[in-house]
Image (tube, rainbow, N blue to C red):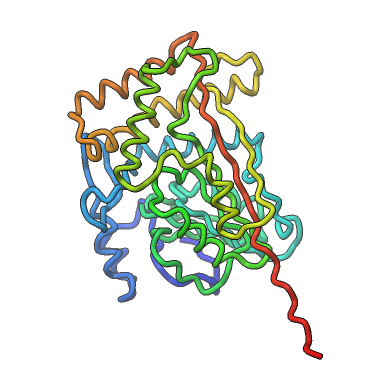
Amino acid sequence: MAAVESSPYEERIEIGDDVSESEYESSLTSETTSLTSSVFNFVYENGRRYTSDRKGAGSGYVLPNDEQEQERLDLVHHAWTLGLKGELHVAPLPKAESDEKFTILDLGTGTGIWAIDMGDLYPNSEVLGIDCSPIQPTWLPPNVRFEVDDFEEEWVYRRTFDFIHGRNLVGTVQDWPRLLQQAYKHLAPGGVLELDETHVTGCHSEDDTCPPGGPVDRYNKALAEAGLKMGRDATVAPRLKQMLEDAGFVDVVEKRIRWPVGMWPKDQHQKQLGAVALEVCNSGVEAYGLAALTRVLGWELGKAKELINEVVQTLGKRGVHAVYPQFIVYGRKPEEKPVEASA
């Protein structure tokens, strides 16, 4: 695996799909042994594979990490790139436009595709992607590395970051204020945090083709209920701007866009985005819903599958004009004020 020399980050775990558990454990330090011994203890439920549950059964991470989910995550990255018209981020990054070195932290990196693209785009960057699941590749740009880590644990990095990025974290975070405080603490003065979030319980139509009480509405409400029961609020996306401001970030900006689901828009760009979004939903409705409905809410598998299938069928129907709101929120850590000399 390619790694950056003299990394500014604490040594943790680096692993890809082609690294065996025995090979991996042979290179561990004592500080990471407890994490390593459990990282391969995947949870298998209802035909899907989930990340190891080091905090005990039912602690709440309900998204799978199997190959089907990895394909979906890469498709989600494609959708975001389309939605942002080719951009990988929205927040301005002054150092990115110069030859000055700068550091990036990608929270919940998933397959690592965003981190890899950022490393390619900005060769003057040093990119660290972290995730609870060891599903990232090992062939990487020389300025990109991955570590298995839980961003809700205490951060112990030895240096600060110039840019911290999170995408589609809603539904996985138990304590948003604490996460934002840790991000703030580990940003360099003037550093930027950007969160790109789908309002996962906000799928709707503007012409009543997804009516109240219909499958999409019932699914949204079930996800919201499961999120509250887990302590992982799935409705938080519209409140992130205020949360960043409360955490001390300045110049906070919120941009709202929408993804159509399906090829019904007349605009060609929106039509293309809608086609990709529909493919994302075809697997994403189950990814977000299966464990949430069964493990968390206690539904029978058949009942959960029935609602999931109804939602997928509804979103794929001609004449249904569903949209998913997207929230891009970013803010800056203030520059440190120079200390004035005493008289």
